[in-house]
Image 1 (cartoon, helix red, strand yellow):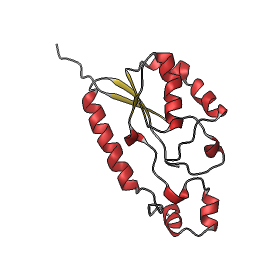
Image 2: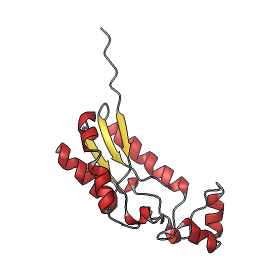
Image 3: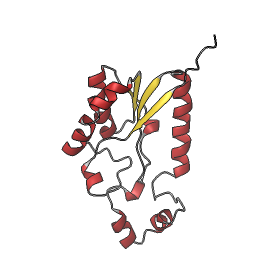
Length: 158
């Protein structure tokens, strides 16, 4: 009888909402915590998370992600691993600002970014650097946890 293949499953979830999300501000590496609404976002996932069957939890080192992971890890009784390679893109000079503010300021890199040219913000990180560090994390993680179900708290670039 042939042995069934054991595939690693990655279940991706974004952190709960922050006040800066609500205000449509770029937060990147700014260490903003969850808002009360963000905590409720994650609480709403608990039933679903319990039914999926998770072996391992990874989170970025940013407070909003760690808080999200903590809520779920308490429910599952699993201690989360913290890995800064999962941190959101560093938006440098854009952090704390809205797209409208950056357009008004005529930030050249932002205007290129908005037109799909992926220019790095001043003092920030390129999309290619983000891709490289997340790829390295995934390679290491998949090798370490082959055949397991993982929960990753990845930051989503808006």
